[in-house]
View 1: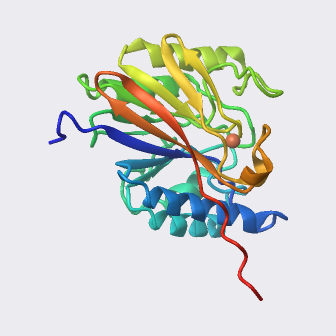
View 2 (view 1 turned 60 degrees about the vertical axis):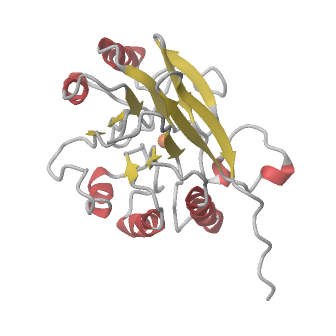
Length: 266
Ligand SMILES: [Fe+2]
């Protein structure tokens, strides 16, 4: 039983883009490891960690093996979703152990009921495209996930943000405005979704889905981060801590991982 006065804490990381073939591969690996170490040191500890996709850059099994090993070091339970750079089959195989990913499902979408806020994780991936998709079948699956429980508030996690992003070159991160509208309508239907948390854009931004506040966390991979950061922050990963208080809803804090340790002497 969850004590009424206890605040639920979610750490959200995104877009680690782990790769072996990129010139900055070592930095991406270091950023990912340092983010997990930082989350492990938080006091109070988070109840759960959600990775909002683009876990790896090329969807390869060997990339997922490294990503899974890093996430296995997290003290809090970790949930993952698929971004446009992810491969559903390889992602599912790498993270099948804990049993929350249905092995035979076309999409990587699910609900977690262990907390005072339900976590509903959606699949907006369209293989071969950087843009998001959300067809009628996924709308039905979203309604089924939402309607499986009717008392708790819901936080929804997507890779592609379901709102127009007013900073940066791309306002729309779905294939068409109609696709995004379909998802936005579905999210508002129950009246129980209290927040939408996304990634993909590689910069921090925010918007709304009707009355629902929606945010984007920047990428963990510091070489891929967009927007201006001062020099001393260039190699410090950034992630979000979402705290849920039943009286106030979610309050989001930006967490900046500490200074990079000095390189070991040769
Ligand atoms: Fe992405």
